[in-house]
Image (tube, rainbow, N blue to C red; front, top):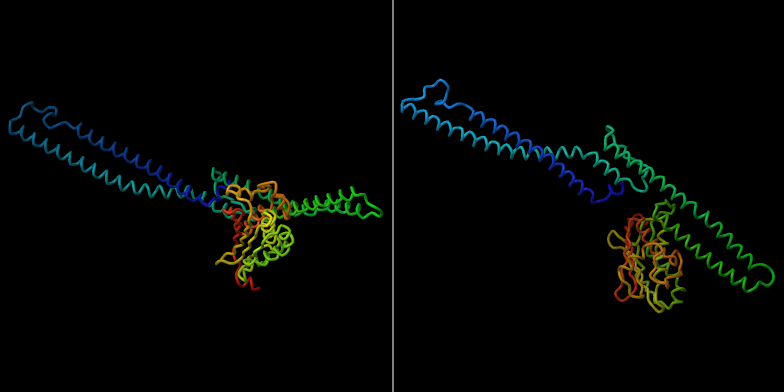
Length: 403
C-alpha cells in the first residue's frame, strides 16, 4: 500500500477521484434544483387553473348582455396571455438560475471534494517521503476515528513491519561476512595443513586439496557477491563514502586483469577510460570498485577468444558515464534484459570470473550499485555481437573532486 501511494502517477488518479466527487456533488445538486423548480412550476400552474373564471363564479346569472360577455372574454384572453408570459418568464428565469447554480455547484463540489480528499493527499505526501532510510517515520493521521484514520493506522502498522524486516536484513548483512567466512577459513586451513604435513603426500590428496581450495574460492566470491548485492539493495551505510574517480577505477580494473585478457588473446582499448578530472562521482569506493570490476570481468569472461574490449569513462554535463563494450555472440535484447536478474546466465560458457560473475550475480550487482548511487545501468545488444553496458551516475561537484 505504501509503495502504491508513492507512485509518481498517483496524482493523476487523485485528480480523477476529485473530479468524480465533483461530478457527483454537482449532479445531485442540479437534480435537486430541477426537481424543486418543476414542483414550483406545477404548483403555480395548478393554482392558476384551479381559480374559477369570472363567468362561472357561483351565484352569477347565467346570461349577460353581449357587450359584457365580450368584455369578459377579452379579459380572460388577456389573463391567459399574462399567465403565458409569466410561465415563459418563470422558465427563462429557471434556466438562467440553473446555469448559475450549475456553475456554483461545480465550484462547491470541487471545494467539497478537495476537503474530503485532503487527508488522503497528506497521507500520500507523507508516504512518498518515507523510504528505506526513513521507515521510522509514521503518518500519525489526526482527527476522529473514522475510515481515513483507520487507513492511516493500517499504513503505520505496515511501515512498522517493514522497518523490522529491513532492520533484520541489515543485521544479517552486517553479521553474515564474519559468521560465514569463519567456517570457510577453517576448511581452507585444514586443506593447507593436509598439504603441509611432513613426508610424501599422496597425489590423490593433493588433487582433492586443490579441488577443495578452488571450490572454496568460488564460494568466497559468491559470498562477496551476495554481500555486495545486499549492501547495495538494502542501503547498508558504509564508512568509505567519498568522491571517487570512475575513470581511474576502470583503468585499475583493466590493469589487474591484463593477464586474464592476454590469456584469451583479447584486444583491449582503454583509451576512453582516461576521463580526466571531471569523471568524479560521490559514493562508496568499495561498491563502485566492485561495480567497475564486475563490468570488466563480464566483458572478459563472456567474450570470444581473440575478441576485443573497449572501455570509456568521462563526464557529460552533470553526469558521468562509464561504457564497457565487448565482442561476442549475437544476442537479442530480450536475452540481455535477463542478465540483470540474479543467477541468470545465457549459456553454459558463462562461468568463471570473480565478484559474482560466475554465479550469475555480476550484472545484478552492477545494477544494484548504480541504483544505490542514484544512477542507472543500460544494457544494449550489439548488432555485430556482444554487449554494450553503460552506467550513468551523477557527477560530483568540482570543489569536492578537488578536495
